[in-house]
Image (tube, rainbow, N blue to C red; front, side, top):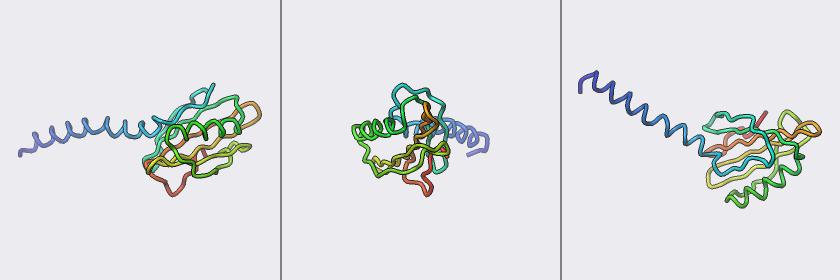
Length: 133
């Protein structure tokens, strides 16, 4: 095969694969609901192929953790225990869950009247599951 043809094929394959790789990362958060009455603060990619979504809400961290425990169970996740300490905001807590090989880490905390919620999902459990720190 001549080089110009090979270069075109390589570019076409790269372009065709890029959206599917991006959507795979986005799909990690697809079955994880946003906190009730929350404001989305954004999403970002994490190491080890993970994805993070961040929110703020006026609900207490205890209410956020309770509602997530129930919602995740209904969405097919298995709670793997608590964890975290509200991220760098303090005054909160966290939970961990699995859904097949997928791993979720949620940290919620903040000053009185505002709870910051960080939800991280990886394709499998990472070595460091701190979310929002």
